[in-house]
Length: 202
Image (cartoon, rainbow, N blue to C red; front, side):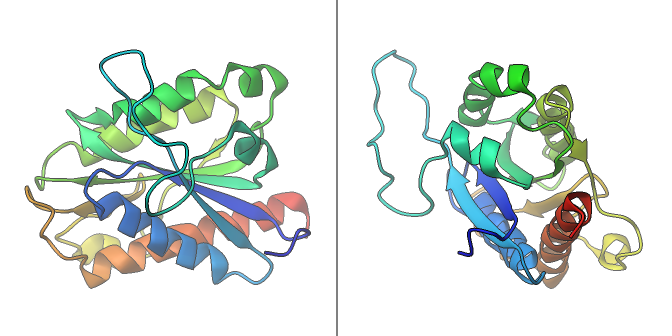
């Protein structure tokens, strides 16, 4: 990773791997833009009791996010599976702890996008994407979606919305990523990275 390159934080929570796969495609789109690096990070699961139940370092996948990742990023892609039409509790828990970054304006003016996966085709993809936008607006971020200049938005039958990338994973997570889903996720990452570079004036 080049320390002088804009870093795009791809932050996600994934229970069964579908949201993580979307994050990988978004990171691929970010890194298709010359001069941009993607930083993949996740959040730990939360417990119904107060003691910590997760190891300090995940067994696999991306490292856990730190608040400094927010402060250092030039843009943010935020992803969560759907939980009753809303973001998952671990992601909400993380954002509830970002008051210092809100007070300092650490994210104000930075571009952002959102992505999700659902077990059922109409399982709340769009409402989940909208729920993730709310804390980003409060942080002063410039939230973007996918324009209909991407033909896959009109042809997809497996996910992908103007609000952000999405995937219908199936109840058991066994629905494969369609070509449209991959195309739209990569396009979203690319659009985010290009916007971050323009906003930096490079």
